[in-house]
Image (cartoon, rainbow, N blue to C red; front, side):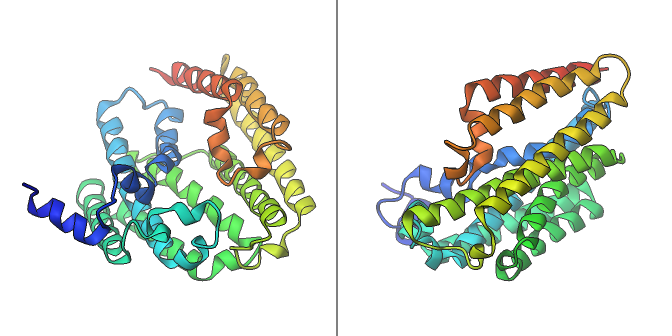
Length: 301
């Protein structure tokens, strides 16, 4: 006999609800972005300090809940546009699998747990950074996302906030070179995402993002090329500031970016989440893990 929770879920979601709907609703696959929270821990040489590792893990989990609450809210706000999109229309809210009422309930629950946990476990500074991220996303969704190129800059800043949270969580000052590398790397990925959206309009003839026509394919390609060059250049400067062999970590990173450029014309422009190509392309994935391994081994003390 079904319990009260199952009956409630059925009433709110409908009989056809499946577990993968929750995975899609909360964007659990996007939690990989939140691994940026660990970068200050690794690059500061504190990866073996158990107390700091635990704090960063808490920050990762709580921020992931916060990010999921934002994803849910954005899906509620964008439900009309998503229903016109050939892929986004399959999302739980847009497809009607999840009701707006249940989605908002999930949003409030995730938000409450993440903010309460940040304040009680990680402290007031992390709590403030969580608020900055949350309200920044709301302001972005309601206003900034329609103002190119400010939209891609702000999204890149959201990536940067993750690294800042990791830095504050362990009480260290992250290197400016590291933060700039993260920012321009994010700007590259976001600009390619816009490029894929603009390309999709030419194929499908359906525009689901306001003012994306203010961009052009050549301009977005140019932004991608510039930010890619800056990312690698800044990281190289950062890497050679370390003694011994750390500069060798530039090599696998360079190969990763070169590989992404090679597949850009055939796949990247048509991928709405280009960061996922890193985990689909075997060569890029191999060099990515090689780079991660080299960085961790170097900083292991």
